[in-house]
Length: 179
Image 1 (cartoon, one colour):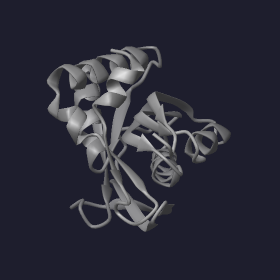
Image 2 (image 1 turned 60 degrees about the vertical axis):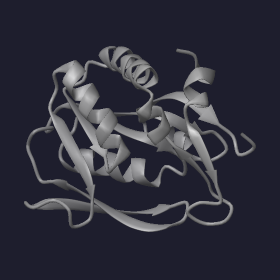
Image 3 (image 1 turned 45 degrees about the vertical axis):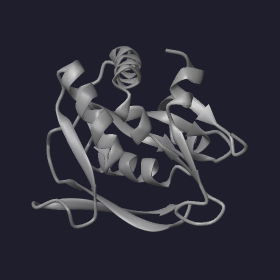
């Protein structure tokens, strides 16, 4: 499936959640089973080249992708949740979004110590959430952390910030503000 075909299955909601933000909604992509399968297949194909040991999904749409990838790759799945959603001992990271502040958490686990971890989310924008998840993986002792997503918002600094932090980054498609 081409980048244009993937993009045609992503709905843009203008001025949401606040004026000036163009929200890229992947739920329409998830609703198209052929497109969703193609996205998971392409992410799986790329991930197989990275010699990974674990997959971490960022709350909430990243869970959908990471769960399917972990299943396809036969790897453990780590959940990176919004603050207060995990029941056991956690590590936390604060970060800045395009439109506010937030905190994510992960269970304090030895599962990824010394491992190569893929962090997955639906979209990469300013890089705040992705970098916070990377910091959590590193605090848990990950040897290497990569990042994969469906969408890169190319006019925002997320990809460059991740690459500056030494994170190998993969995106299936890119959007600019005018699309």
